[in-house]
Image (cartoon, rainbow, N blue to C red; front, side):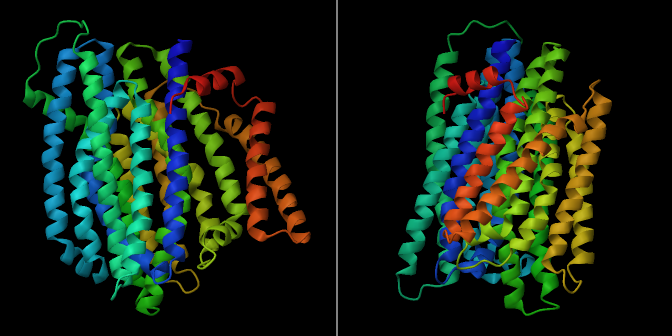
Length: 525
């Protein structure tokens, strides 16, 4: 049991490590583009509007697939049904290569209509066109990542994501620099070439993960498994779709929240301010704020990703005690991430914007407001993974749908209010997260006999976060008073804040020290 639990933590640490590195590299090209002459907030609006539509189609064709495949593969491994395991993977690759190809063709063919009629940002057409091939490669990559997760090879998924991000950062900066030096360059062309870098990076990551898949597949050929009747392909497809469609629907609704902003914010604001001002405000919201806000969500996704195959495996083995332990542990880890993230972004919003976007600092008040929804978003993300592992795939869909409805209503009602404008979209995100969290939490308590003392779980992280902020803010003010550079003061203060939080974590015994260190030592990233 200790080894299994340690492996579970190793999977989380591996993915969290990759996400930290991914976000560091992601911040590089985001900061570069925001501060790039001729790009800025307007370029971000064009870049992100196209990317959000791509992300929506990507969600339809692939996003729910890794979790669905990992769930099936973990169940097959638990029963040693290796023959049908291999057949399942091959069927999934074939099925979603078709889905990805259709998504690619659709996005390319409809790019002009989407840019002009849906987004009302005609400059996004070229961005949509160059992103379309990436849908095909990601669809297949997602299946193989699910296979690796189900095989308890989560580090391969982490590495492939890391490779993709590094290449995306490199090619984005390289391509934008090249296009900016050419005659007749424009913000539209720079946004398009930045999105083209995504396609190139996706293709190279695809090559890497296919190579790893072939190696793992070769090692499984000689394994002695139990005899099971050969499953029909049509039954395999039905099973994949039965699991993947609700998971994909949940992911679609999550992505749709961003698309609601891309469709409504500019459209509504144009009635009250100039079109240029509306695009810039959306650029601030979609690029600066969302990119920073996605950091804790990206780290926390590691928990949900590791949870689904683990809980599925334990469910097949009827290990209720093991399931409950993992649920409690995962929720607590989520809270440990969410509380300091909320405190840090709320307290340091203006400093973070000055540090990251010195040439375009507008929007820090949006980050301060948006940080209030982090706890609910992260807990919803984790509990969704728990429910999906337990086979309750439809509940996250219903919860997300409720959140989307609230989001739409808030955008329509709040954005037009003078003095609120883009803040209305942020408030909508917070209320949407609260609604979704309420649904999944109530369902979890009804589905499994588990007592979750959220107040007790919150106490130590909140106490540690308060101490963290008090110490670090006093240090920041001391450095500023003594004429230390603002950026240096911010970096030192944030670093000290992290150290203080970790120290408080061990002092208050939030984690088992020996188990945590053992997991880090055995984690291969």
